Image 1 (cartoon, rainbow, N blue to C red):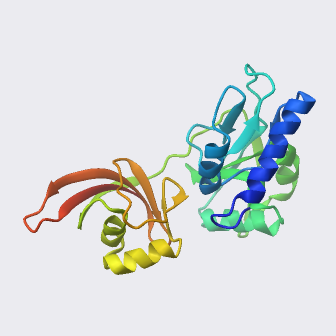
Image 2: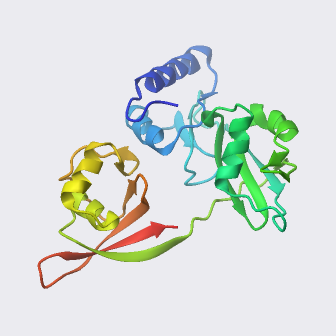
Image 3: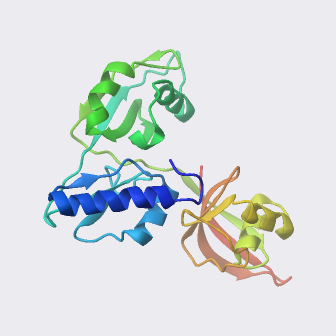
Amino acid sequence: MTEQGDFSSLASHLKDLQENSEKWHRTLASAFMNEEETAAMMKLFPPSAYVKYDGGYPDARKKKVIFLFDEEDDFSDIVCLRARADQRFRKIGHRDILGALMHLQIDRSSFGDFWLADGYIYLYISEGMKDFLIMNLTRINQLSVSFEEIDEHPVQVFQTKKITCVAAGNRADALVAALTHQSRAKAKEMIKAGMVQVNHVMLEEPDKLCDNNVTISIRGTGRFVFLGILHETRSGRVAAEFLQYI
């Protein structure tokens, strides 16, 4: 994983992969990248007939970049594991699953998205890690689990709700202030401290205007999609509508 905002080593690694793919006439894939890394790398290695981004299912949060030698190649080394999670006597959550993976000394770039749904745990992983996890990931916070590979590639469904906030406008600092219920001065401090991302890229300019449907992520507060301005208030402020991930 890279330090926040510093992607030089990752970019260099992907450049080597791309050159080796062309040199060896082989399809090569990176490790899993988080959303910030993916957004940064897409600018340097735009998706094309020979470059694709894959997380195992559409709109996955963590993805690999795959350098294809043949533009008709549909290669992917990502598989989905599933385990029944009987939580009648032992409740587990996202943190418990992550903790179990970390306990196995697995780097975060070695696995993709994972979640709990309808009594099952779903985990996307590189095919090369499949057997290791099936053999070793057998307990999560004292809950016994047994993973198996499945042919389907299920999609993670996120719960959201619409909220409305009164803001000074659609500048980033104004929207962050409204979402965090703080002053614009405090919102600017949060932006300067690297606590705010717009479309998974660290925001650097507090006065950036936010377009409709951009994703705003605020560390310690949550993730929101800015849907737009509903109307102007009598005081000259605006009612801004968001989709909040819950």
